Image (cartoon, rainbow, N blue to C red; front, side, top):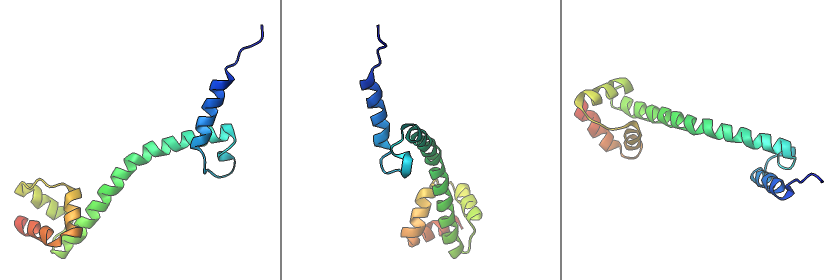
Length: 114
């Protein structure tokens, strides 16, 4: 009896991956083994960088808060220490947004903790 191979399923599996690698450069888009490796590596990068994105945004918020705090003659660390001591529960994301888009509200917060 001849060997039975499910060509339909294996072709569909390959087509699914090759469709995901459309737009890649050179053999990465149409050679099965290269495309599969590239696609899998891309998933690894995506997983890693979803976490790095959080890191980068926190760093950006801290820089913005520091810049705005220094305009009020205060450093970032002293501002954050004073906020915690005063019991003001405001996260860095909101504080950075206030510093950029609403400087008078940021100044009011700084004046409150001074």
